Amino acid sequence: MPLLKVVDLKKYFPVQRSFLERLLSRKIDYVKAVDGVSFEAEKGEVFSIAGESGCGKTTTGRLIVRLIDPTGGKIFFNGIDITSLSGEELRKLRKRMQIIFQNPYASLNPRMKIGENVGHPLEIHGIAYGREKEKLVMEMLEKVGLQPASKFYNAYPHELSGGQRQRVAVARAMILKPDFIVADEPISMIDVSLRARILELMIQLKEELDLTYLFITHDLAVAKYISDKIAIMYLGKIVEMGEKEVIFSDPKHPYTNALLSAVPVPDPNVKRKRIMLKGEVPSPINPPSGCRFHTRCPLATDICRREEPKLVKIDDNHFVACHMVK
Amino acid sequence: MANLTAPKMITSMLSKISPRRGVEGLFIIVGLVIVLTFIFMAIFAPVLAPYDPNKTRVGGLYESPNSKFPMGTDRLGRDILSRIIWGSRTVLIVTFLSMALSSACGVTLGLISGYVGGKFDTALSLFMDSLYAFPGLILAIALAVMLGQGIMPVTVSLTVVYVPIYFRMIRGEVLSMKESLFVEAAKAIGAKGRTLIFKYIFPNVIPSIPIVLSLNAADAVLTLAALSFLGLGLPAHIPDWGFDLRMGYGALTAKIWWPGTFPGLMIVLLTLGFSLFGEGLAEILNPKLSGR
Image (cartoon, rainbow over the protein chains, first blue to last red):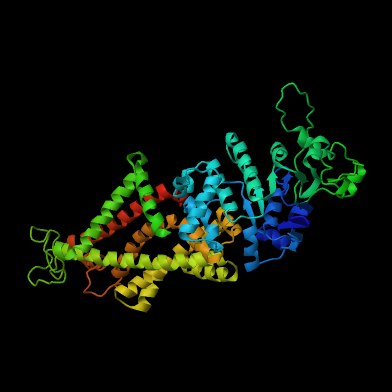
């Protein structure tokens, strides 16, 4: 049984309109941020979702940890439907499922000391208070590499660098000893020189605490480094999904190909052909008919404009949504 | 929580008031000196005032400023300096009391309304906005007429005038704070409503309170003076600048300038002190607010 199973997950945000517009038309537009996403993540796996900004990957992460409510679809955690949990049950779920946000400058309470920021989950869930809490927090701070822990415990977030803050965010997510963590671009706002260290820390903690990650990123090089499986998203849909090796060695979807060709290769002698996509990502309010990628796809034909391709299995653990792939 | 952050806030505030800060720093210092002088006067009024402010003198009506009465006497022969010193006590008591009450009510209601949202928020906002829509002085006059004279009635009417200001500001901050990432993060760790409000939202809106507090204090001094000037403020036996200004104003036509000028000057000075302090504070603590 997969630890996390997502079935046809949808999130439509209504578009804010002015008073006059509301008066003139009854129709409500929606931003289809996530539009029918399905995947499974096994225990102990790192499952990555990659895609351009605006493709719905962050929304997917937030839906899974139930920070926002889905418009449709189901989320199963450990085989249990968590799509409509609320109140006390949802709070219990939070103990087992955590999220690390992209922006460490905004995700910590600026008026709480580091120790309180990290230790607050323990108090909220009634696990430890006072001395005992302090001890657990110190241990966790040491574990995420904030040493000496006693110095960091009494510091305020504004006294720390971005990398240190993200370590604090990692510590806060891990202190409840969850099974599953959504990491929403955890390194994209950190200084380049510190990124690898944070990634290493996350991998090390994953082994130590037996975690499963849903790793959200726009950087395929990072996805390649950390993932077991990768799903590529475009305009709210998964276009290709599979084992990391398969995706990187044998990409099928033209969009995946284009993305991969943009990943820098650390060897100046390797000649590559960049696939340049024309145009911009279309608006998710009125996504293109048929295949959403057809407006920018070099291989697009008539059928792509008419029919929406389904995500089909073309090999063990390799799924593609494209009419041109047979 | 509050006792942890308060000293921290003060030290960080003080560290920002350095000569480098130029005009804003000067504003704060000058404002603070003026306000502190009046507070000093109010506290030590019994010691500082040379005479009983209510003692009338049959032979000494409208004495011009001299060595015995530095600011002269009024139409009942009362020492104007003593009345001003005791008057500062009246003004400051009413001002501080109404500030404390209105900020307590406004902040609490703003927090709850902004956090709860929905119909409750709409209803309360509508009520507060309609209060806010009245010009402050007109509202204060109406309330003072209804409640009558005295320290408490005047304080209450000023309180009602200023509650909407705190309410609107705090509610707005809470609304934007509710969307912030660290509040979302707190939800993700399972924090409940009360914890969210008191540990995550409230400590982060505290810094905007002192600015509004001191700017409102300036306004309250003026409004109180206006109420007393119109005879709606305090009973005659309580020394009060606004009332004295009114009395002195009547004598101006007879070229007797001192009974009106000195109380008026005090009103201007104290208002200026609060305003300078508030503006300087706003400039330093919250550059975003300074455009208002």
